[in-house]
Length: 257
Image: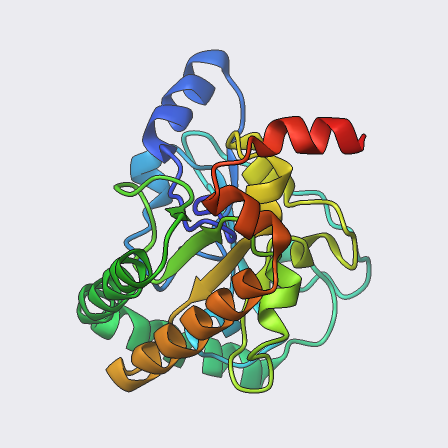
């Protein structure tokens, strides 16, 4: 992944590319989250194959693209669909012309507006994070604070179950919880666990994704509703009450097991 969809963290692509080059390994990147949001240059980073999609940059759904290096090295792709030999033999089938045209127009707009969108959204994201930290206790931003996308943040609210928190406002705000990425699984996000979060913080995380049409008023609304939901959940939580009283919750959880 060029950029992680859960945390927004941008991977060190050039460094990875250099390692691949030294070892003679082809480098493929899923850049769906990055293209159209930040500068992405496969040649400069040593990426040989790069996949991205239209709908992530406000184009039509159902159409994507694959960058394939043609020299230094030339990458040969084996067709998975036989037939008329379309796309230079790489993918047979009738082309989705309206989708392709829409994709191209969306890419054109994204290129023109990418920098100003990034500057605006990063300010809104930072305001969202800072407001939660000012209004609430035990709030944690997950992942790198430096190398990350301008529009995505993953935040944990300690001792508040993410799925339950979303129920307090889910008719009005579209968010993802830490357990929603694993398709109905109740396991915590493996990405957050790999970052070193315990199950409790991983389960208490929400992913906030801002977009081109997100306004300051939207952010203030989210701050108000999510903060109210966190306070409501904590008011009902005996775990939070014990935590505030200084009870060693590690010992409590161990005795329960």
